[in-house]
Image (cartoon, rainbow, N blue to C red; front, side, top):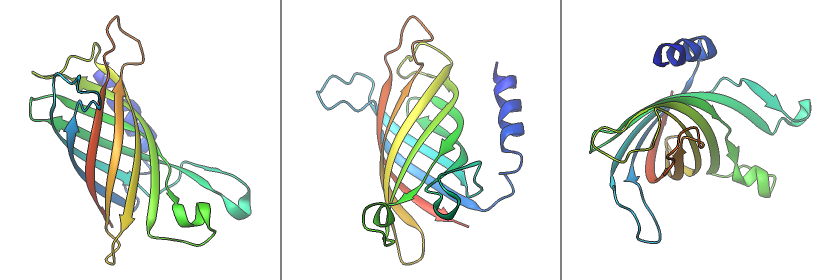
Amino acid sequence: MIRIFILASIIFFSNSIASKGTNVFGLGIYDIKFDGSEKNQATDFRYEYRSDKSLLDIGPEEDNFFFLKPFFGVEFTNDSASYFLTGIYLEDNLGELFEGDESKFFFTPSFGAGIYDDGSGKKLGNDLQFRTSLELSYELKNKNRIGISFSHISNANLADKNPGVEILSFSYHIPY
């Protein structure tokens, strides 16, 4: 299964690997619950490569408002859990979205799938996991960004057990 995932990722992203993009480094709290029910809290370390090359433009030609772009990444926790994933994201300037003028704030939702190894951390019930993420970031003067994101990882009920996990992260984006 891992070989199929890696081969599909290489084929899917072969054009994107050489394109311009952004390196995203994140640090967060793994298994955060706002009701105090967390049992396997850990520190989450994240790296993502986000390509600037669009896979699909959605919207009228004169104003394409959604550009679906590929990403791939890896997450690790301090209790040895690891997650290798790939997926799509879209990025929208909040000023353009709400006021028609660009601002320094960006909204970035994403969806991905990947292979998860729980190490000595939380057991998520399956090797195949899906991640949804919502991120808000601010562009600095040097074009780098700082951001905050909230993510959910789940096996989408593909296994008998599906506890899922939420992650609250802070990130630093370096475009090139």
